[in-house]
Image (cartoon, one colour):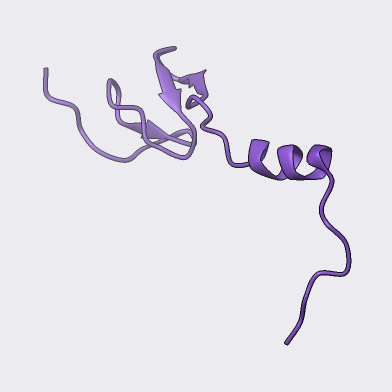
Length: 59
């Protein structure tokens, strides 16, 4: 059975654990209306994604 040859150092262990931390979602302004929108999602206020109208928004 495979066994680790050496114990992992504390710095390696902490850096591995730190990579899995929670990140807040990044918002960018919509190119059409300027509303904050998360990446890869159509703008909920104007319905535009990557410069074209995806759905109609009823006000």
